[in-house]
Length: 224
Image (tube, rainbow, N blue to C red; front, side, top):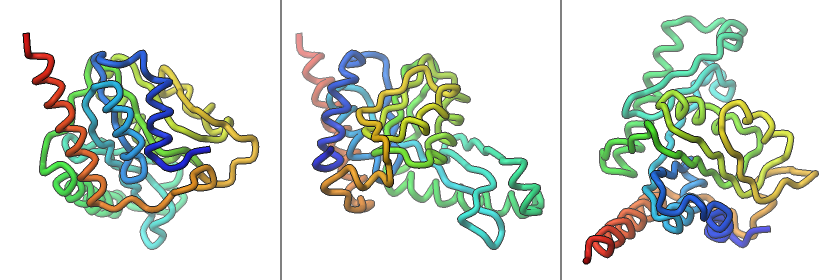
């Protein structure tokens, strides 16, 4: 369906073109969502930022999520009370793992953005972008955090996802944009000819290019 993430981003941007130049922020889920979101932000002429989400894994079972921590600027912690109870995770253990994941978020923000503060979301249209959804656990945690920052309107935009997964987000967003909802889903990578892993250096490059494009547009608009 898509040649690569850039192709997916261009197609997604075309559907979202009504938001061009509005009071918007595009948030990317790194790393795979960044090339997609970069094309959307460029086409809409709006800022691009990252939605940094880290899973809090159970002690001794890091793949088993008992919560999430989102964004190192003003961290938001989401606890899964049922899973905390089932895994017999103490408050001390939860806080220790959460602190470790928060450090990783801070490391990534400094690496990717040089310590730049997150974009303000209050009162704005926020478009959250990833390269696709499978289970959607990371996206859900991110959207819950976005909602707590009082945006005016929230759009979840992905190139591909199973229809049943999209339904799980109706309570968190004002609008869902998805280009393809195949009946037999499999995995996100099945729908890209090129689905290679995105490296840190590429994330940094996309963010710098978007920032440079925004500055050029601002200078253009300031010319009488």
